[in-house]
Length: 151
Image (cartoon, rainbow, N blue to C red; front, side):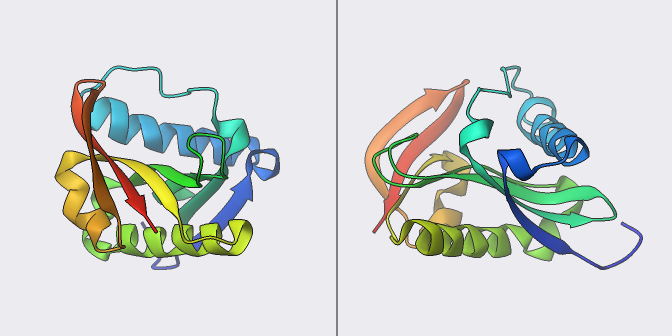
């Protein structure tokens, strides 16, 4: 990244430009398919129902997640596809991203309740934000996951 300017964005699917959507999908494929060596259909048909939150610098996605309202993925709002570009993981963008995502849930859906499907190696990370395991562990695309909730 040439400059240190980071811009945070929150947009519905309809508000995304073609270029923004392309960069988001590219970032998700880079992390979830290529980096994690997990071939699966990254575009799952849910993007149109999500709020997309990301940090951008020099037209590059630095961190990203999507937020769903209640009764879309779970009975309560949910956060998913959380990622930080590998070149920016030392910048604490993942923590900033989660704080923004939780603020968006609270503001838009008037609740602090959130449910996620967390990759097991990130359980402690999510616990920092008040998430607790439901005890439901499973493999998703051959990667161990745990269902977590936050009240």
